Image (spheres, helix red, strand yellow):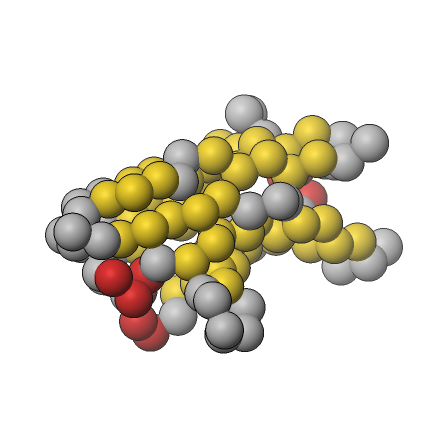
Length: 118
């Protein structure tokens, strides 16, 4: 059974930091490209950051560049999202996604709430 379990969300003041974790089980984690998405109320889900399976190349949505860092630890089957200088507009449910290309597989976590407010 495949599981992606996010943790680390919560309430933080503007300018603060959080680190999200996504622990995977039931998959060969090192073979999966991992991503973080977020969905704010009334908005579509958007890709925040991604990291590839082999080279660990990363990409970010423009609005988080320089503030967020995605990383992975294949020994722990875990992907992280370090979020610094948080803004109220970062408030959303954050989801972890794992994807492999051949054969095509895609899995999502259940999400973790991040609220940035004073």
